[in-house]
Image 1: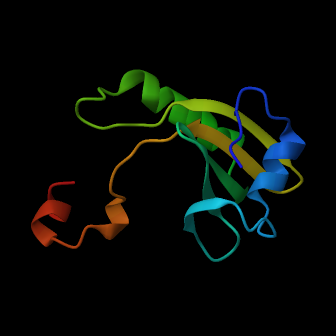
Image 2 (image 1 turned 90 degrees about the vertical axis):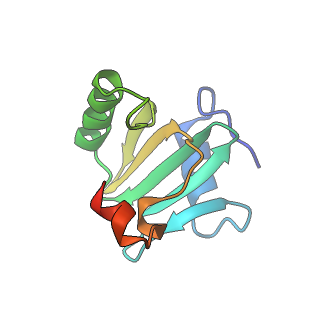
Length: 110
């Protein structure tokens, strides 16, 4: 299932990100319920406890002020909360997560 982040309702996004949805495209999932779910070709949802409006605002600021030729910060599309869970809908940036880099020389330069 592909969702259009711009037109999907909050309930549709919550349902799509639910752990009971076998069709969700998991990019990463952590203990405690934090997940990053790809919802379309160009968007992901970071969701769970600890995802906050504060984080969304900081990411928006970083996206606006940092040079994308140096570091790529995903653009924030939407944020909403449902109870204790936050849903941060943002640009999908194809690449390698920093956590997967094992070379100490590369890590030292980050």
